[in-house]
Length: 243
Ligand code: MG
Image 1 (tube, protein in one colour):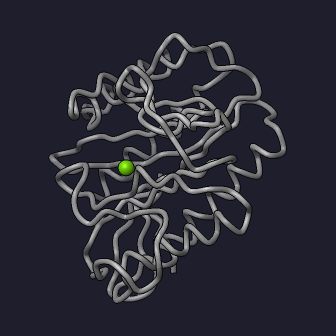
Image 2 (image 1 turned 90 degrees about the vertical axis):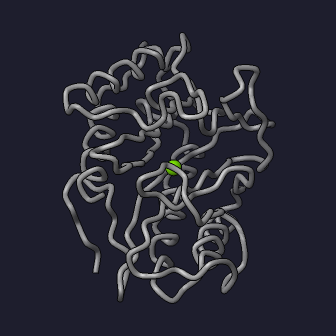
């Protein structure tokens, strides 16, 4: 999973650099497919429960599970890219939010705050802690900045399957939920809204958008719980173990 993690992080970075105003989200999706093909890996999302895209891509109010479409990316948008691949049977799953040109100060704050949510979530991902410690850390960080947490979609265990136990919600109370053990690999993925937390699903059956139409931000890392200390981030371009 270090390999699948590193590879998906590399692809995510290349897709991030590809994004520019004027492109449709479908063009970005197809570029991601091209990058996967180049590395001879497959999308973990394409066909998953019938999902039609190679990646998940969403703009502004689109939270997660967006399908590449004719929507054009504009200067000032934030674009969420979520990529999953399979490498020798192992999943790599990571997501980021990209600012297209100069975005509003509120959007910048939302992005920074969501990344902070991910960071404190990872810091809580230690052997002996419980899933609720991650959830509570993420939630309190979001609330501190007056943002709200999406409740319908959550992080997850990950391995040979895209979604394994345990679920890793971005809200909850400390010292609750399953115990974290060394060797576990989980995906922590805060989805944080600028406005209210409520979301709805578009008629395509997939795209999750905020009910109030305000922007949402999403970051995701796959981490490995270690015997001691902080979890190892697997979805880094270089295998960096934080100590
Ligand atoms: Mg995920």
